[in-house]
Image (cartoon, rainbow, N blue to C red):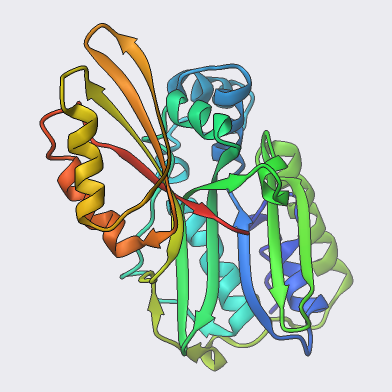
Length: 305
């Protein structure tokens, strides 16, 4: 029996058939993708129309890009499932998702999108998979991407996937990722393929029993730039308290600016120099306990993709 699942990942982008048929004999090193058209539309709309998150979500629902109950899209679970499917095909491996953390866009604000743009970046929800020292790494999180990079210009309900291989080529697939039309095209393609090809074919290219067991992890030792935005009380010593916390964890500041919200509150936006993720996570715990902060700080990694 043959099984087709093209519509399960990236809507109208033929990524599954491409991986199964066009990379025979080629070792895939890494896959990076915008895999959820709902989230990409919301992030685009927040920037273009200066809408709050909930307003952009409602518009996505009205256009048919978001479901009535879109929690799995917004919290990153949908992207995790999709990158796990691509990982299974690309690396012929069984994926254990039980220990994989995932992060979505539900806490991203209009301010985050605006300030990222001001610094020369776009915020994108990405799914990433690659092999490192015998382990399969899976990451799902919103990242900042430079406007000079290809994925930063993928907007609205579109999806895009970058496939990096051992021949040093970078292959990019782009197309609509959310909405009835995109999904219908992929389903129709699967039905047509099944009707024309009577030969039995496995969903992942080979039998599930023959897939390799591999240790799966979301733990990485990255050394990236980081974006920090926090709502800070307008009090003497507030900025000094924040910079001291970063200094204590050997985090160097590349740029810092602040913008008044009202007479008692302002946004502080920091872009760090390259620093270890472990250091930024420890600093975040201290920042979120700082008496000058209102709520938790938003911290996002800058991805060079």
